[in-house]
Length: 98
Image 1 (cartoon, rainbow, N blue to C red):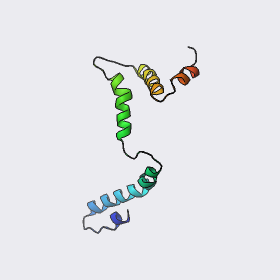
Image 2 (tube, helix red, strand yellow):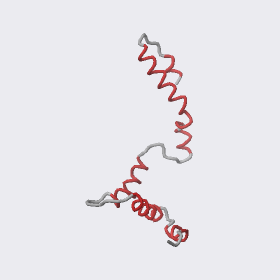
Image 3 (tube, one colour):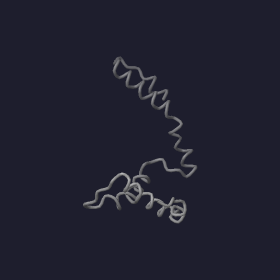
Image 4 (cartoon, rainbow, N blue to C red):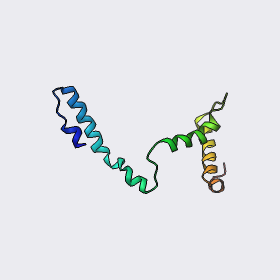
């Protein structure tokens, strides 16, 4: 962060871009504590989330010829998520009778 802000350039446009980038890193430094997150066994990339979306959402909701309303897809995804995370029975126990 300090390095970006200390780069000398005669280009005003480049200097502004460097300041913008340096400020971004300053504002988001607490979100970029990757070594700490890894020590806590947290994922720091998007691959796990993307794979989860593909497994839970894509394989069920993106099949050929399917069309979903927002309400319908939210309902089916709630069921699928509860099934995958082992809370399927709890999901049904907490549902209100329609």
